[in-house]
Length: 348
Image (cartoon, rainbow, N blue to C red; front, top):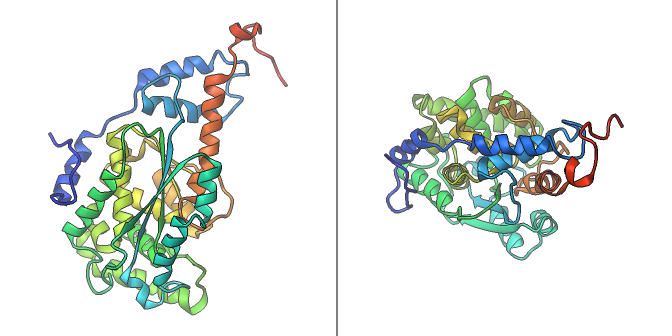
């Protein structure tokens, strides 16, 4: 039985694949107790809509009828992509490093959102001086590099986290995400390729052609999601995939950010369809293919604000929605404590 977290020094893709046979499941007794508690709150049944579902989901993964949200964390993984040299982004590769410095200095959008949500923000630099290989010419990462990046992401998950949000920074990574989705789900490259940092016209055409060429180049990996991740992903995307998997092993609820983070999650979904049961989609980004990807993952977004920044910004915002769900669930009066008749307050 393989249940221990692989280390970056010894990890292999086969070892990581073995974890999927031992994924913990939600605590149905806790979920049922949470539903029963919902039925006693001073409101018409179902009147808080998805907030009620979120509270039960949190309870089921934390294993307690009244979930907690005292320690949320936003984890941003940053990596550089060799494919960026093909002009698939509106910005040069150096911007990845510069934005990481901006996060460290507190100047990013995600810094402001994390502070507002009282969330711990951690930024992980993934071999920024060693971009992945150009995945049109060969694999972005070899299998051992991919396994090490996944293990690094797994080790970033600490005990006693109540909720984890995943974000990314990496010039060229929407090209990588598009290639992953195209390889996993088929269709045409155009179905999965969008503007990313803002490319259009000839640049968008070039980006789409790169995605098509990359997927064709690695067609021999079809049916092996982890090796597809190695061929078409990036250090930060592999780390996010590993971190999401580690959260599942720890029964820690997860909020997925935008297109890139969702593409990382899609690799796990391809390994085992229930592998993302501990995840909610925080938002639907303005990247056109994100909505189609969420449909493939069977995830309805909590927010839809036209955002496409990345950085975990949409997931960070959605912490507030989860916090509201938990607060209402835990702190509302019951019919008994409020002295309200069991029939409830009626139609309003």
